[in-house]
Amino acid sequence: MEVLRHIVVLIHLVGFAVLFGAWVVEAVGKRRITRLMDWGLAIAGLAGLILAAPWGIEGELNYVKIGVKLVVLLIIGALLGIGAGRQRKNGSVAPALFWSVGVLTLTNAALGVLWR
Image 1 (cartoon, rainbow, N blue to C red):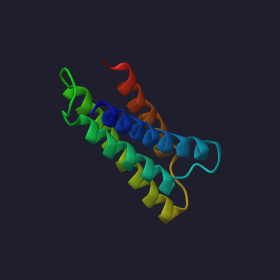
Image 2 (image 1 turned 135 degrees about the vertical axis):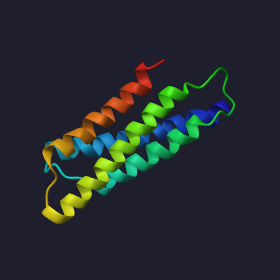
Image 3 (image 1 turned 120 degrees about the vertical axis):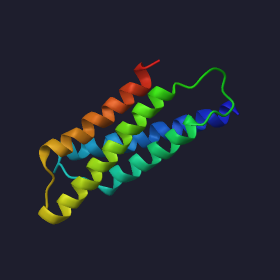
């Protein structure tokens, strides 16, 4: 069971890497929202929800941490949706919206690593 949990953690990290990596590439380039960011968010979110289930672990889960990370994930998803809509309409994304996606993605990773 522990091996399965580690595999899900790996998938969760890959989702974060896809989201943040796609954002970094766009930060250096045209600063736009891409479908790859959406896929990274979906992968990280789904794997995170699976990890939040109390299956085969010792000790208590930190539900406050899980809740905060879920709220940040939903905000990132909303920003990606708003940014993609504005991008389709205007051809560009507002800089504050674009940079917020990267900052919140990094914040969510920091919460996962640093909050014990």
